[in-house]
View 1 (cartoon, rainbow, N blue to C red):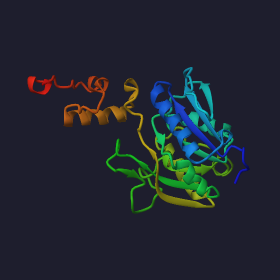
View 2: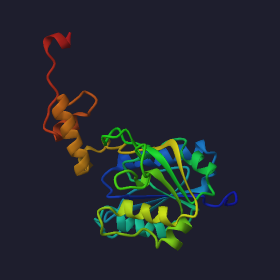
View 3: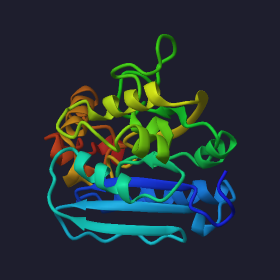
View 4: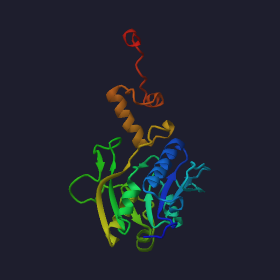
Length: 251
C-alpha cells in the first residue's frame, strides 16, 4: 500500500459541462466516501475533463483538478483516455458526472487495496430492469453485466499492461476495457457490497438528460401520468403536465 500522504485514489470524470448539479452531487459523494474511509485530503484526487467547453469544478476539501479539453464528443472515451494518463493515484475509479459513490466505497476498496481489480455492485434501479449490476449468477464480466462504476482498478494494470483506456471508437468501450483488465489482472475480487448508484443525478439538470434517461422518463410519465416525484420540468420534457387539482384535492 502507498505511504501516508501519497495519492491512493484517482477519480476520473468526463463531462459535457451541462450537468453542474449532478456533477456537484458526484464530487460530494467522493468527499463523503473519502471522509468515511478516513483518508487525508492528499490521498484522493478528482480529475474532471470538460468536453469542448470551459467548465467550473465544484469545490471540495479534496483535490479537484479541472481540464478544459478540445471537443471529443465520443461518449467521454477520449477524455477518459487522457485523464487516465494524467492520474497519479494507485487506484482508478471511473465516475460519470451523473453517478455517485456510496459512502462505504473507498473504505471497502481500502480493505482490498492490494487486489488489482475490485468489482462491487451498483444500484441500477433508477435505470435498468435489474436492481443491481452485476446480476447474480453466471460470469461477472460479460456484456451488459458490469459498468465502470462497479470497478476499482490498479493504475499500473490499466496503463502498463493494458495500454490505458482503449477502444475509443467502439460503443462498447466500457466493457472492452473492463474485459482487458479482467484478463490481465494478477488478482481480482468480487464483493457483494453496493459501491455506487447509477444515474443518481439524472433529474437534477433536466435539460441535460441523455437519450436513454429521457426515454426512461417518457415511459414512466406515460405509465404513471407524470408521478408527483418528478420535477415539473421533467413533466414538460415528456409532454405530460401534472393534473390540475380538483375541488376535492384542494380542500
